Length: 262
Image (cartoon, rainbow, N blue to C red; front, side, top):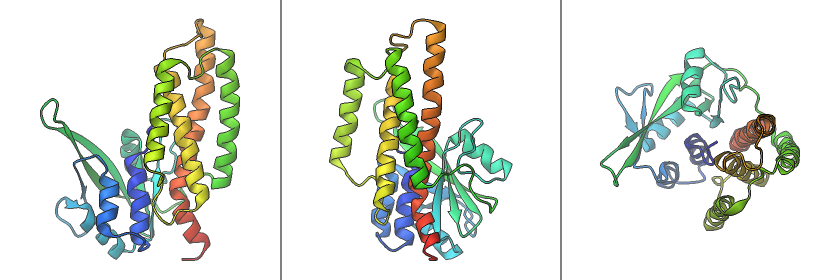
């Protein structure tokens, strides 16, 4: 599970830009992150790929009022509303951004270029038509927070019983690295997001990290087939719940503006 999906950065900082809370330069810098460059292809009125600054300005001119995130997985079209071809591309990428106010969506395609030791990442966002309908299976922030706390508690009990909870030097190093990143930059979301969204996203990312550690550390003490199966069954719903919580946090900006009638 991605701790910080590119669709999350695009939606969060795109929302802040659309609301006039950040400058275009600051928004683009945050969205691109450690990638080399992002471009948008297929925008209405454009014959070829354009840079993010122009793309975000064009989306605003087209009437886009906000950006939502989708983080689909096989059998779970989380945040999507169709049509099938857009859903298929989003599922292949495992993420997408869906515009609010205009029936458009953006799906990233990631390229690596350059020689060994100097590889850089380029991203092309494909702009496609979407269906105007409520996004699938996205909870409210309150629901997401409650579900995540409950799922984490239940999974911890199972994993501890099977001796496969994140432990040992590899797990400790991963958790330490997460904490160091969190301390370096406390701005998990862009300006304008409610504090509860920040809290939910931080918890979802932390849970995602622990799930990754549990998978990467092998089977731990779960030596029998039944124990391995039990571990997988314990992790799967937690991972699903964490993805739902991530989407709820990223989408909170649009939900708040809708409730406020803006």
